[in-house]
Amino acid sequence: MNRFDGKTVVITGGNKGIGYAIAERFTAEGANVVIASVEPQVEEAAAKLRESGAAVSGVVCDVTDPEAVRVLYERAFDEFGQVDISVQNAGIITIAKVEDLTEDKWDATMAVNTKGVFLCCQEAIRQMRKHGRGGRLINTASGQARDGFIYTPHYAASKFGVMGLTQSLAKEVALEGITVNAICPGIIKTDMWDYNDRVWGQMLGDYGPGELMASWVQNIPMKRAGEGKDVAGLIAFLASEDADYITGQTINVDGGLIMS
Ligand code: NAD
Image (cartoon, rainbow, N blue to C red; front, side, top):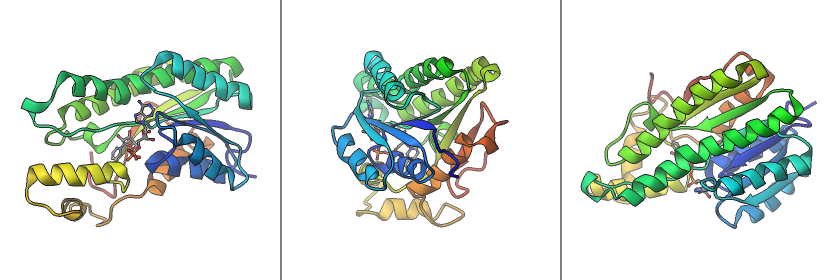
């Protein structure tokens, strides 16, 4: 018996990076999985996940578009009969000095990282109410929701916003058996890591490829960068029955980088 046999999980940003690792974890533990992404490669990623024998669909969906989000969750419901767990993981980052931080960059970041999380939670709750057996919402924030880093005020604000909406929704749906939690990954090896290394590396000094991230990893008590599977383990726990009594929380998964 697997922990998530018969459960349906929606994962945004599920075609690569942390989201793909989360999808691998849920498929390995028996869930039906719908991965969504703004990138068309989501279909390929779903096909790769299906090689394990799991039931997986890939849906192209821009989480900033309420209609597309509605269609995503209805499709998950129609295909698998229910939505039990929803992981709001899609996110973007740009890095800019304050004088270069345009309104467009600000709005785009808030639209994906904060509004997108809200829209997905809203639709997931609608679907969970159809079966009335509760559910799990897990929102990906960031270490920057604890401690805003230089040249990313828009990203830090968007991730602090994720913590606020998580707490507020948790209170609203608690009596329905729906839990809402957020997680804060630290430094995780993905495409986002490569972008951060290159752009921050240029802005903060004369760092060669990989050098800035290598120096940041030295600040992690465990002295290693995180991997998608480290994050996936926490998400699977929060989605499981063992986390029945945990809601409205924000939990770091960062090798001890931030201890508050
Ligand atoms: P990634 O760039 O590898 O993946 C991001 C995913 O989000 C992709 O699948 C992309 O298609 C999707 N996405 C972006 N905009 C979208 C939109 N409008 N609609 C739907 N999907 C969209 O990044 P990652 O490192 O895997 O990051 C995943 C999450 O973890 C993000 O929310 C990110 O902010 C957060 N995070 C990452 C790190 C890290 O070190 N990598 C640290 C802290 C937090």
